[in-house]
Length: 240
Image 1 (spheres, rainbow, N blue to C red):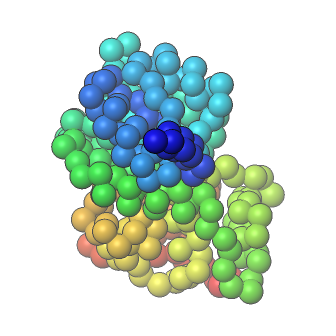
Image 2 (image 1 turned 180 degrees about the vertical axis):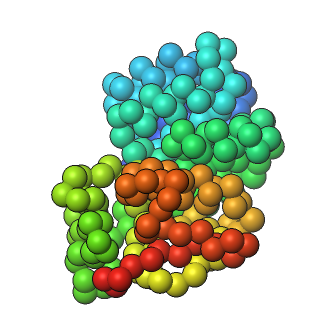
C-alpha cells in the first residue's frame, strides 16, 4: 500500500501563541493549524520577545501568566515596535487585568476556559482590521487639523503623522464616517470588534481614551471625540 501524501503546510496568517502550559500550547497549535494558520509558539516571555523580534507574526495570542514575567511586558514590547494585533487569552478574568491589557495596546481579551470557535472568530476580526480596505469615493477626510487618508491609512494632526494600531484606526474611521452623530457603545463595539460584541464597554472606553491621547490637543478636554453621558460618543465636526 502506497504511503499517503504528506499533509501540506498551512499557508494562512502567521500566529505567535504564547502560553506556559504545554497542553494548552498543543491544543492551540493543533486547532489553529487545522484551520490553515501558520503557528509559532513560545512558553516564556523571553522566548516570545525573541521570536517576535526575529520574525514578527501577523497576530499574537498571549497568556498573561508566564514563568519569567507577565504578558503585559510583551504587550509593551510589541507596541513599541508595531501595531500587530494582540489577543490576550488568560485565566485572569478581572476587569482590572482586562483594562490594563487593553490600555497597554492589546486588541482583545478572552478568559479561560474558552471555546475554540470563539477564539477563531476573534482572530478573524483582528486580522480584518489589518486588511480592511477603504470604502467610499472620498479618499481623504478632514475635520479641523485632523486628516485621515483612507487609501493610505494615514492619520495626521496639524501635519504631524499619528501612528494608530489597526483597531484604533478602524474605530476612528467609524467616527469619521458618522460625523456629529451619537453612536452608542453597542453600535461602536459591533462595528469595530464584530457582531458578537456589545457588552464589553471597557474595551471601548480604553480605546477612546487612547485615541484622545493621540488626536486631541488636550485629551482631558477633547474637541473631537465627545462623551454623550449614558449613551455613547460623538465626533464633533464642522467640516463633515
